[in-house]
Amino acid sequence: MNPEVRRAAQILRAGGLVAFPTETVYGLGADAANEKAVARLYAVKRRPADHPVIIHFAAAQAAFDWAREVPDAARKLAQKFWPGPLTLILKRSRQARDFVTGAQDTVGLRVPSHPVAQELLRLFDGAIAAPSANRFGLVSPTTAAHVRDDLGKDVDLVLQGGASDVGIESTIVDLSGATPILLRPGHISKAEIEALIGAVGEKDTT
Image (cartoon, rainbow, N blue to C red; front, top):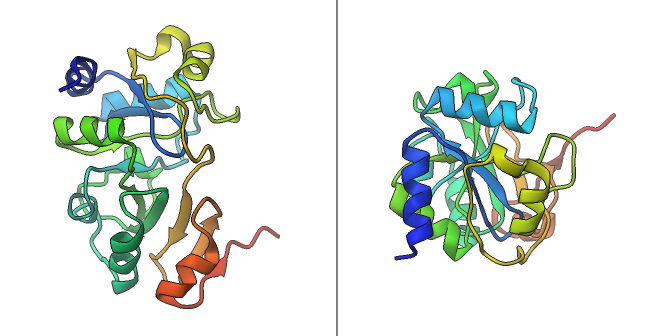
């Protein structure tokens, strides 16, 4: 057991903020069930309150507990790409509160593959709200040094994990409506997604 990961889990349980590596970018983590901790996360990031944050889990079943509806397409994508750089948007269950969903009726769920993130999530044994570990609007960090340069002492601990392998944010697929929608392209391509679940629409940017 990495002693720094153990310390990180303790900080999260106490309502603190921990930056940790994922395969995409470094995330700024808070206990997703702790309203005060998440409020501090938003304040540190300077993130608008109506912008939801992605919730991270150690495994798919834990993630799906935060959704009240899990369509077959979500299970297919999870089986293929989780753990990995994919976020699924589903209709939220009661566990996903307004303070992490931006008061929307949906929630973003992800199971990262980075070994440090996995160790932290398993040890914490809960859900970690974790947008990218940078001030709102700035470039997402791919190293621990980037996090420290941007957030400084506003984060209680930065876990080391080397440079992020993917280096861009996760692919986001919205499965909360009648038609799957690609909200954000990423390392997992639209073609890979469509090969599993059929036609996928794209976000209207007009």
